[in-house]
Length: 363
Ligand code: SF4
Image 1 (cartoon, rainbow, N blue to C red):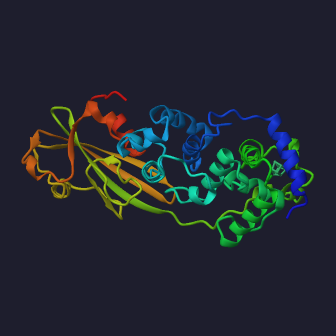
Image 2: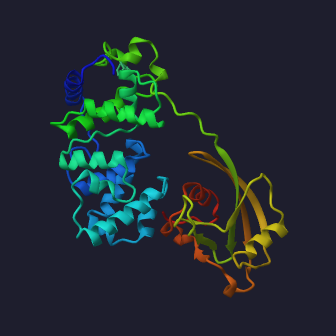
Image 3: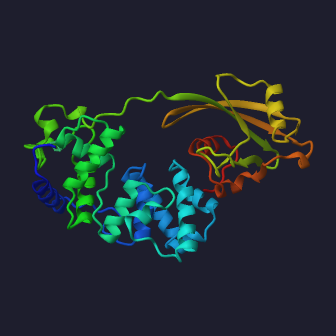
């Protein structure tokens, strides 16, 4: 452990927190449902980016019953652009579970909260401490950075050993009497003071005890996880637009990260290439699509970075007169461009549609 005692750390941290209030929309809220929504959004999203999504979600689903009675498509539409869509699917599943199996009452113990779909150690600790004042430490990226630097932890949080070490430290430092205030304070301190780059060490209440500061190795901590090689995929999408300003879309029903979202008919390839007209025709047949008098107007290239995946996407903009046979269509829908705002698309597809449809649609 570092050279600061847990008692001294808590005292200084809570004083710092009082002097640096961070007024975010979910600060000081004790309703478990509201805390849950905000914490799930914050799992992979910065506070500034999270605010408009949090506000939209709370407006559309002010209570657990509202969320449980909504459709997944409604939730995904609001979630669109936030990424990591499994969070939305799990929120929906958990809301239905609480409504149907727990009589609509949010669980009030750490172990029961942890059983909810999509809730891990971090979220369970946040809800337990903020809503029920239970003494469980939150350990997110901010907390790992603060404790990793303060105590000079030489293991990565992403290793089994490192995770154990960080949780031991987090439990030792946690203020059992006011776990809610302590958890909020340490996360705020990491987010606004002990920053990833250029932390404000000169005005830090811990700089005399901070291991990383004392040994001049601030940028070495927290220890990073070993780099995972990112892979590359090549996607081909067909924007099929007819003379009545309609396009063809489909809803993903596989197990991918974009499950339940809408996209265009298309295919994945492992290598870079441009499809020829006969190849496009052949692939469209897999969706039961046979076009009359079509023309490939343009091919547009987009790139999209996911956590460990680089997507290279080619969009083929195709205009056509009509379909040879509507009855053969396979899991696809023909929709008017002006109604596209009703469907949730992955961010990169929405961007392409916004930039390339020759008829704007209200969003
Ligand atoms: S001295 Fe710098 S690195 Fe250490 S806890 Fe304070 S802000 Fe973070």
